[in-house]
Length: 263
Ligand code: GDP
Ligand code: ZN
Image (cartoon, rainbow, N blue to C red; front, side, top):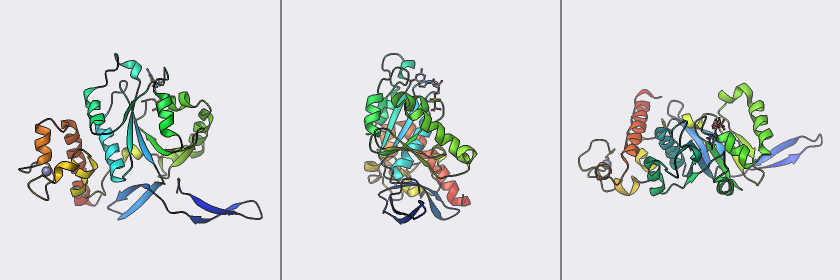
C-alpha cells in the first residue's frame, strides 16, 4: 500500500523483490459495511491538510466537517488551509472558520498569488506524509507550484501515470516533496462516506462534543432530540457552533441509512 515501509532485495537481474512490509503506525481507510471489511487507502499517514478557499469558491463547511471527522476517526491530526486571502478584505476570516481555531484545529491562511503563508505551510509538510485534499478550484495545484517550483513536472507525471485509472482505483499515490516528506494523492478522499461508522461513535469524530457526551442524561444519547442532551444544550448556549451540529446530524443520518440498507 502507498506509504508502507518495506525491506527489499535486489535480484540478479536488477529487479527488486519486497521481503517484508514493516508495521504501520497509521492508516487511512474506507470502511464498507456491505463488504464488511476495511479498505486501506494509504499507510503511515501523519496528517490531513484540508484545503479550502475564502472565496471563489466559498468554503464548504459541510465538506470540511466530513474531512475533519474522517481524520478524527483515524486519529490523524488535521490542519485547515484557507487559501485566496487576497480575495477578502483585510484578514477577515469568516466566523464559521474562527470556530475551528477555537476547537483546536490549526487554521493556516495562505495566498498562492502573493506567497503569503507558504513558508509556514512548507514547514508543516516537511518530513511528513500528508493527505492534501480539498474541493477542486481552491488552489491546491497553485499552492504546490508556488511552494516548490520543481514539483510542477512531478505532479504532471503523476497525473499522467494514473490517467484514466485515477477515478477507478482507490489506491493513492505519493508525491515526494523536495524538502522531504510526501503528499498523498488519494482520489476520492473528499467523497469519503462515513458509512461504516457506528452511529454511536460518530460524536467522537467531533472533537468539541467529546467532553460533553458524558454529561448527556442518557448513556445512549445520539445528540439529536434527546432530553437532557449536553451537546444540544451547548449548541443552544452558543458554546458549540450550530453549523457543526448540523454537519454531525447530516453524517449521523448517512451512518444510520447505511446500517439500515447495508450500504
Ligand atoms: P485546485 O483545483 O485546487 O488545484 O485549484 P487550482 O490551483 O487549479 O486553482 C484554481 C483557480 O484559482 C486558478 O484560476 C488559480 O489561478 C486560482 N487561485 C489559486 N490560488 C489563488 C489565490 O491565492 N488567490 C487567487 N485570487 N486566486 C487563486
Ligand atoms: Zn447528547
